Length: 259
Ligand SMILES: O=C[C@H](O)COP(=O)(O)O
Image (tube, rainbow, N blue to C red):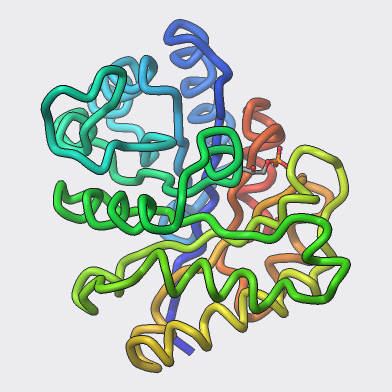
């Protein structure tokens, strides 16, 4: 198995204005430092509202914080008459490493199709950003036992035509929709089943070597109390954390899941 550095990414969603963001990032940094967090063993990132990015960049670059940051969405376009949209070029200029693509809240509330998400994944790479491609099934699909085929169809469509050279650095986040913000966490076995199938699909679409190197995260009610058992699964390489990432101490504990 490849040596995949775990990634703990906090998705702040629409929380924290730019002043609160400064405070939260500083607190997260102190907490990780106090705990002597080993950043070479676990990478920590925050996906923040667009309006926070400049403040986070100033802190991370100015104080040389060992923290990656990124956005929660991007436009499929580079520039032009697309009112309200944000180009990947702007995000790259602000030092973003990551950008979430296809979070279930965007798929649902903004009707983002797999075709659009495929264009967004390509736009991210065009501007030097690493997409964190989100996938996951709603409750009725899980109840019908069709979660694996649902997720694999999303992955196949969202990666359509993406060259191997780019796909090898993608991060995939499996987030069963019924476990997001509900307190209902998938069992480690549930997470492993789908993450393993995603790796298998990557192997089929690209190569076993590529599949072995890609990081696959689990998301959905991850807390410090349940992260260790999820991370113990062989195909889970990190977590995409929503609510718990807004509490610096809790998120730092999640990032130190090894103790
Ligand atoms: O992007 C994060 C996920 O939607 C999980 O959110 P949650 O940890 O609040 O359940």
